[in-house]
Image (tube, rainbow, N blue to C red; front, side, top):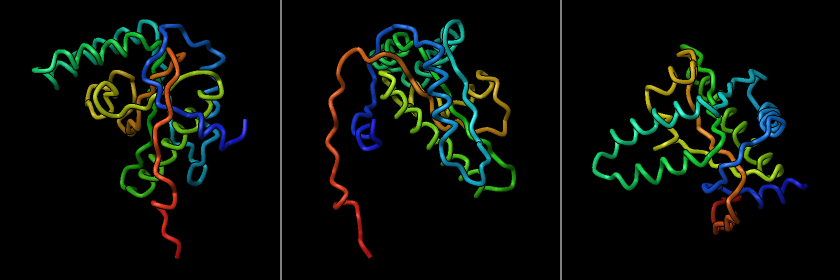
Length: 185
């Protein structure tokens, strides 16, 4: 598939079937991630694959987080947890933090974001749906997440990816043309 076609096909797929994602497809996603551009070839990413029993533990952690964050919105907690329960595969992506070197740490975070995008394109090509979450159920900013995944403190969570087989078609979202977002100098 051509790059522009893959970019056009890519969607944030929030509704997936509770069907397991095969190991070879998970490996293909992770391989795609490692092909992402990164400053000085530091390869500053790490991937935590969550499924099976670990996913059940993640669901418990997510429930605690959501109930604390939205105590007056039980419907929001229930809807968020239902999405998580139906999603068979979760991958947490981190980037290396270099103590005392904020610029390199920031570059590492950008590289991890590129790795996520590479996985997103590969998912579309493999017939998988993917959504990158940072807030809410993604637990990116929750202090319990790093210990849960067993990450050392010198890593920053860049995103939590929810992956599975799409439960239907996800329509394209309208995008502004590049001409509205470009200044030619």
